[in-house]
Length: 199
Image (spheres, rainbow, N blue to C red):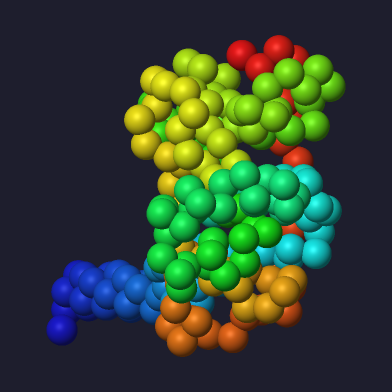
């Protein structure tokens, strides 16, 4: 093989080896971009620590870009909507099994705004009748997430969930057998900053 041909061969060989090496080196990076098979890591499931939520208070959690509101309801709140919830949910639904806890998607069903939990506001004008309030268009929801005032037509959505025990709830499924062991560290939520006048 003459000198020019040899140089051309070595150049092509070098490029080929470089491309192969780059391909192998990029495998871990590409794999890191793939969705995690672990539902706790991927965010498909969310484990919530209920012990962080005092009676009568709400905490908000982000799950799959959804604001999940968890309310530790007072007995008078659950009593006021007991008959309604009996119609809304079957006997084996978590809401019926543990009525103390209200778990809803805080997105207003009208146009997708974030609803506010009004209980605990300083003026406390709306809390008794309208515990959930849409600051954008004035829709109001009750202690079961039911519509009290339009323009919303549908109640607040209820994400799939199940209670692991008295202090832990998993959001994202209602089938305990379909998920791996709940991680020892569960999420704690945040309180919601409320607008000054409810609008």
